[in-house]
Length: 369
Length: 159
Image 1 (cartoon, rainbow over the protein chains, first blue to last red):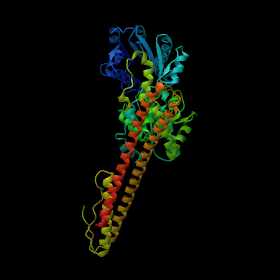
Image 2 (tube, rainbow over the protein chains, first blue to last red; image 1 turned 30 degrees about the vertical axis):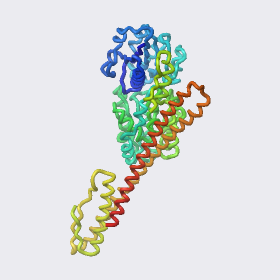
Image 3 (cartoon, one colour; image 1 turned 30 degrees about the horizontal axis):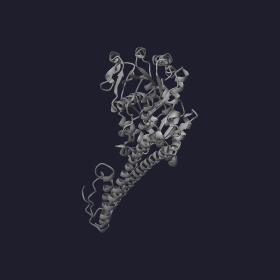
Image 4 (cartoon, chains in turn blue, cyan; image 1 turned 90 degrees about the vertical axis):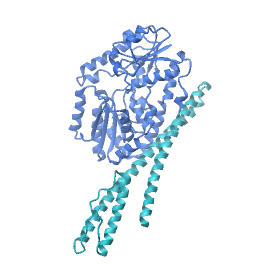
């Protein structure tokens, strides 16, 4: 049996790329012939030894083989892959609805996202098993006619985010500067509402009467939208207090989380939101607007704001900053929640799905230490 | 740095006191920042100059302000270090909570999954140990620093 992990693009640093690469390596470790496969156009950015769709078709997968098909965006290769005679497992990571982009005149992106969502329904009979990152994603699949999904969260780099190498120094340095440190990690796209995070930072500054330092980390998808965020920070008079970080190494993200007084999310649409779990693991208090899968990922942890009002979010950020007991209680609950998304817990869930194909358990001693 | 050369009793006392203040500054600065404190050279005071005392007092006042700033920085560093340790403690408590929850759920599970529970708890135990180890390391480094400062203060007082 061979296992093929397919995504149109595989970037080891993004959430889907890390997760599928992690499962691929776990399978290799227990002796399964596992392969990464991506679209021809994305091969240059993919990890070493990744195959293309053409390679996969040339390998002629047979009914004993398994294709794990990750769906998170429009995929021109989907129909070719669904024709393969191997068993197929769909992993759904959610697709942002087009209207989030359309209202900012990002018409091309909006259309592509809508096409990808439409494609989801068309593929509903093509899989032997269905996996979703969250119950929220599973519900979307059910709504378009898929059979019941198994909910398995994505893998996150648990050991990296729990390692504190270098964090103590950054923590002391940033705390000694006297500002309230806020952080957000996510692409600069409209559905994640980085604009509202900037507005919240401006409100926190006024409410607390203290300097604020907001660090935004992400990738730029559309230059016009990114520039509008910079203009917004100028309009609010906090351009000196907002740091726009682009494509930073993950060490910088961890340091930012570790030294922040709060991770602030105003996102309106998420299929899972890995940075929440990373903040939980690092020990950074989370204040987030309740929406989509954010509520589910936070579970009993994080300070969720159900009222979609940025003033309420800002007030809670100030509370977390000023009330040490609240802050520590949050961190404690978040640390317990992070254990729910531990590598070993997620591997065991995958073991449940892949058990019929595996000769030995996926969880090895290396995962226990 | 040019040494002050006091020529009267009063100037001598004041200059010595100011020098001790500067020494303490440098000691503290050396532990919180790069290199020694950047104090300006002490003026060579002339015994016949009626402004000598005033100059020495000005220098000392300036040194005291700087000392207060350094003390404030040290306070902030300790406060931040304590916050860091408390966060680590809260994280470790959270992990113990997770283990407790899992233990509570063990009774309700069939025997077949007990191995899985044991594996999970072994992983959590490793993580909790890592949390505590980091916290203890930080505490030890803070204690070492405090011990070092105390030792220096005692040595200076005996000079």
